[in-house]
Length: 149
Image (tube, rainbow, N blue to C red; front, side, top):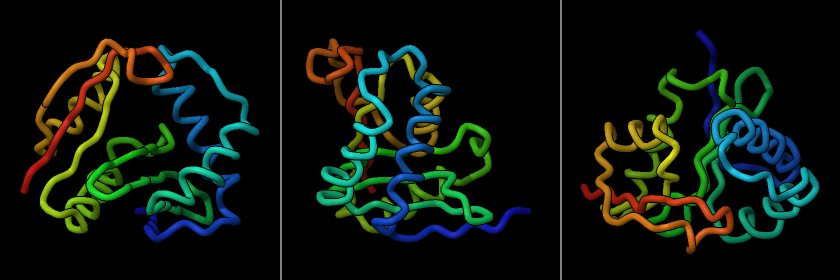
């Protein structure tokens, strides 16, 4: 069994976070347009996510295999390396987010991402509304999900 470390991200880990994020998006969200370069992904994590969110890393054998970014009662990002899906890691991240929340969490999930939708629904998230995609930069229809304690 692998030993996992789940902890706050360090700034010097952001290049590895950005690479894992891109790898996960490329494999799990291939239906989305690839609008940004790896350099732009890194800029985003350094200047937006790290500055405005609580960023949690999941580390196994010295490698970043997952991350979650939360801001207030929003899960802004939750990505795992595709080879580490369905091993309880995402569930543990959600448990931590729920424990730190005010009793409510919200997130957006793309309609086409059926695996993530199922995951969130199993963990008690309910669909609040759907959008056409006009509210996100990918232009893909998405769903606002909410969890309440």
